[in-house]
Length: 454
Image (tube, rainbow, N blue to C red):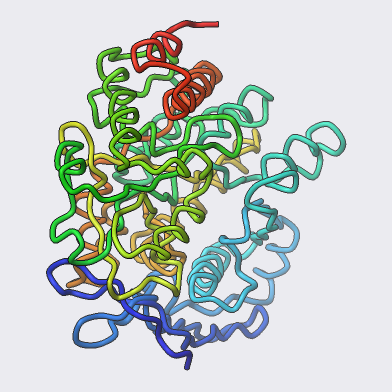
């Protein structure tokens, strides 16, 4: 058993459970299975106050699986054999020695046993870069369209690009409705041009990290942040030229709305954000190095190296790490008005097949993976936020951090809109922020620059 890492505690003293390394494996013996029982009893990533809370069990898909039939039914199944191929990033796999893989494998096994003529295959690609799922889709469409999968798990900000290439037929509203109740950010993330392009499954979102007791209470507004006179770190740079999520969050928190049209919904709110950045730099609250931070990982390392101050971080970074110190705590990122606000980055299943029977089969599989005990167990083990409240209910209870995510963060999350027009707005916003932080532009001029449509 791996030694548990230090816990990550809430200001009320309740630690957050951390996954230990103990895992029990699935027992899959060929196609003739008399009983399949999944013991998803590995400890959570973070330690609980009194004892380690058992991870949720994917009950309907991981246990009590009926044996497969044989004889004439097997012969008939082989004649009508169907295969569902999924392209997904490495965090959705059935082949690695991880609890989330066992949950997924059990759910797929149950799906296959309910349909003896169906086999599901997950092929993993890189999460980003030239070998990502989207880039493989784009290449295969030109070179070998016959190898395209039935389902692809994509970041929602790539859905519109795949749709414009003709890779993704839009879903019907009833297709999404049958999947259950989604958070608002999840529904927003798969919408584009009045169409539904995917089924949201996993998300990550921003919140604040600070050194416990320093400050005593995390600031909720810019005013209280400035009064503390402690450094505030966030990624102000961008790895791809588009706006970072911290900037989008501040715009939403000031009263702005992220629009698919790329229009500036609230010019005074935008100017207020730029004034906040300028004032923060002049007061020393926003250190000059933030203009070079492009990733949350870099911000996290700088935060760990400091003795005071606060920083933007994400749920996945916190739940998935072993270096979260006991002296750190969390809260809502301070904004103009202090209301809970965050930006969600979501991954969604896109159905590529245009064959009606194959599409229906693909949707049935996605629905099985959204079954709350499966969705909840998988998301908790993979350190990602589920897209449905029912799945969150399958997480371990009595934990302050989980409750913060469930009741305060996820309901307040806003999605990144799809489309080229919003992408252009995002690029203008990023450039304007850099000019303000570097002293090249006033807040008023920067806000006007963003409003100008090329």
